[in-house]
Image 1 (cartoon, one colour):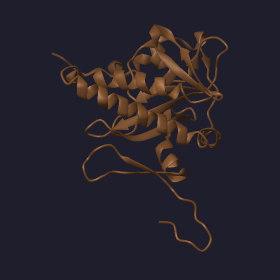
Image 2 (cartoon, rainbow, N blue to C red):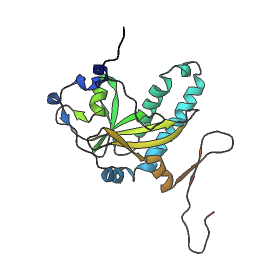
Image 3 (cartoon, rainbow, N blue to C red):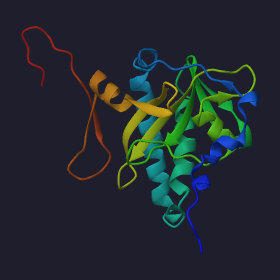
Image 4 (cartoon, rainbow, N blue to C red):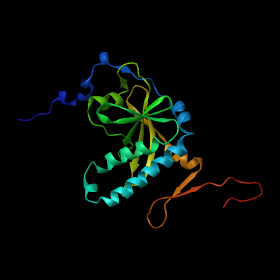
Length: 212
């Protein structure tokens, strides 16, 4: 007879490494993260949207391949990294198994697709588990952030967040980078034909004149 066993509830991802072989990464403070990324928000979001447009064009040209489960995640991931690397001050860092992360300021940034609840989904591998639990090998203990994106039903980018680990509770708290950029100077409004968003720039108010 098959029975439930409490041992099955142990978080097995934590068995992939011991605390003795890892160093904790530095904590990321919300105010400091917001201060670092708010000035970059416009450029980051513009490049992510460009990457999204490039993906949509490529996907339209490969309708059969697009049906595969990993098509969107793998292609979108690479394109976002490629386009963000064009922003001054962002550096690509190669990590294990040919994967890349970004260095932005004093943070390492991991690109991840987010689920409908805004949380990153990761494979239970040693490298992914180290990053999700803010563990590091050697002296490189820069805080690890997640630059997460969500897609709508037709695979357009609908939200972009910077997530940081809140305290020691392994709770990834979001900062809405897309909203910051939209509030900064960029308004993204859908047009009536369900095509790409129309991007417009807010006009600065002048004395005695109304802004149209």
